[in-house]
View 1 (spheres, rainbow, N blue to C red):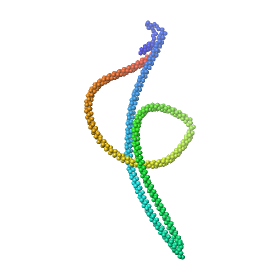
View 2 (cartoon, rainbow, N blue to C red):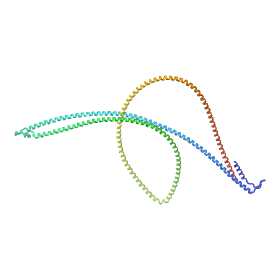
View 3 (cartoon, rainbow, N blue to C red):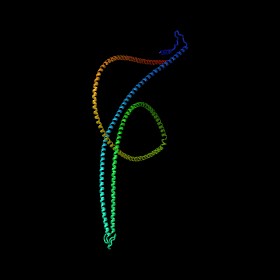
Length: 600
């Protein structure tokens, strides 16, 4: 402030005009001295101006530093505010995310429980259906067994009737054959006797000369001996032929009888093999039922292990999903921020590129339009005919190409349709074959499954009956054992109650004595504890009062320090503000004075 006052006084002294006349008591100064004084005044003014400029510059820098400090403080406050808002936002987001996670976890657990309940219900339904199917299979197996037994009995009856009929037919045929053979033998014997009688009669008869010629016929009546022999031979041939036929018939009957016996033996062997096969099948069925039972037990244990592993895996997956969701949320937030930034940059770059492309496209279009107008103006007349011819050729060429393309497309379409028809035919044939094979396989599987189910049902019935009997025996044994145990327990309880009563009375007596003694000790201890408690309470109250006093003093000191700091800051700000205002006012006044001096 002193330098500013000195500077103002010097400035006013410099602005005064030099007097030409002499005052009273002062010697007259020469012109050189006046010139020198003027130069000194000018140098002084110049130095003072430089000093003012330096002070002004220093004040300006100080003001700028204060403004920068204020801006830094404001920015720090803004950053703290943004940080606080960010933290609050993160806390809210984390709370919302935690709520969503809990809801998702609850929904997932509910879904899993619903799925487990549905699965359990489905298993129960499947068990009920399986039991129903098992009962139906049992009924069908029983009906099938009864039907097979009835068929077997009917077959045995038919076979016995057939054997009886065949034996009766054999006996009747043997009787007829024997009778026919006896008749033929008798007839042959009679014919032979008659032939021999006729032959002897013819041989021994004398001729007309009175001589007996053996083997020569007589000429007067009778039968020619040669004819007699031929008739006998013919009859013998017929007899032999009949005997041959009869022998063949006997052989045929014998072969048929042997064939029937062989068929009977084969039938018996087949029945024996069938019986052995049934026994073997029953043994295999029992083994399979036992194996299936073991497999079911193993499957049940595996299922329980799988459920346990599933629960462990589900809990582990829930925990991993929580951690993963947290990481994904953080990554998603960061990624979204990066994506927003990149999207913004990309949109800006695309906008700049689009504007550049539009500008270039507009310039290119204008140049092309200009060139086209110039070219059209130059070659409009000369190129019209050539253009028409060229257009006509182009149109014809395009039409030809279009026709060729349509033809090729049509051929390709026909080829594709042909190949599609062939492929459909092959597919249909393969499908039919596959369906046939599948039906045969399904029928075979159904037959095998039906047989398996029937065997299983039968074995299960037997096992259930055995279990039921064992359960009944075990229940009876359990009841008898429980009754004995109850009687023994009642006796033991009665003795125990008596013993407990005696012990209770003794304990009560001892307890009364102990209680009296304990009450006396408790009274003494209570008095001592009350005294100690009062002392402790007084010490605690005194310590609490001291602690509160120290805390109040610390709070007052801290409040006083805060108040003093705030007052100091306020005073510094007010002083800075006053300095700035005074400095600006002084600068304004100096500028006005300098401008006024310059104008003068």
